[in-house]
Image: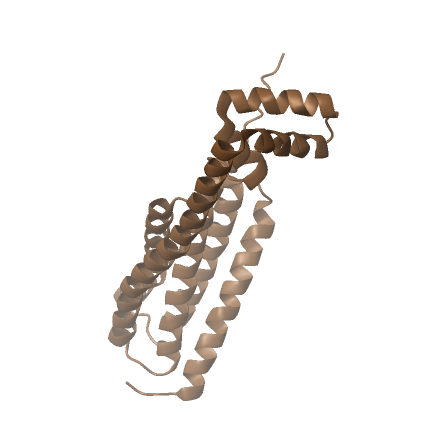
Length: 235
């Protein structure tokens, strides 16, 4: 009999969201910034410096923003859990009936719903209310440090790609329009790969995700390049 693999990947959602967002933002932001500078007439050295500065600033910004937002979520969750714990301690019977009503609303007969509520309350009342009343589980619970580190590192891992492409262009004699096209092509290809890999990690349609990410990245870079060409500032 073949092995039946029924593993769910819901535990990956938290870090996968932050990592995917950071990598995509890194590639798109830095590539767009450098392309805008290049089409505006900046020298390759200035374009490279701009990319490195944007990489450092972007990673710090992503980490700080993710920390603040996820910490706010965590604070709200902890406040809700504390309030629920107080309700359970003050009026356990009412909370038991509330839990039973939730199970009854999901399709259980009243007697069975009450029996299940009793059993789960005796096992772990707080966990049962957190999961079934508040919708807070171990997998969905906010993890600020994890999210901040994942965002910063993934931003750097994505943003370093266009920086390396500019270095490659400098070392191979590609400058001007040639360097711009190298950054554009390499960044779009990396965006596509990032979308595919993140989709595979979550068991989602890979090709659709890759095309979606690459398409939006291409649009962003094209707009930045157009702005740079329109301004035409010589540095």
